[in-house]
Length: 127
Image 1: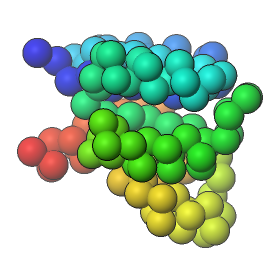
Image 2: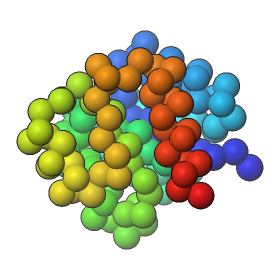
Image 3: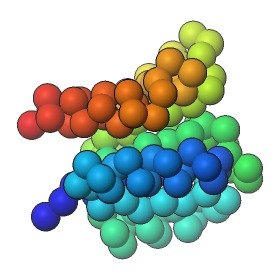
Image 4: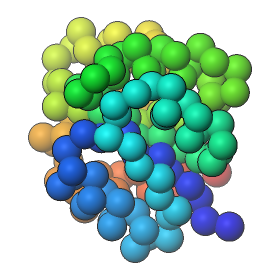
């Protein structure tokens, strides 16, 4: 069975690109634009992804709070979370690490192909 990856990203073009690239690499991809944290949690509980990619800047919810909620919930706490954000400041990075993010990657530092390759490499090394 393919690894399931859940991508929470509000930029439709980036979301479509990530979805396509991960599918080509053999992942089953679940997506959400980040409008309601309740919907995200329901999808995660019901669909049981193996990994989460989380943008911090979302239209209607606070990505930091969502990360805290994910890591504070017994059913989702162990899911590896890749934060993929435009926030490159040390405060945001440190805050995410303190909230339990497993990886923090800045969008400007990773073109799409490089990001997908990096995630694949991290996943392979975790095994």
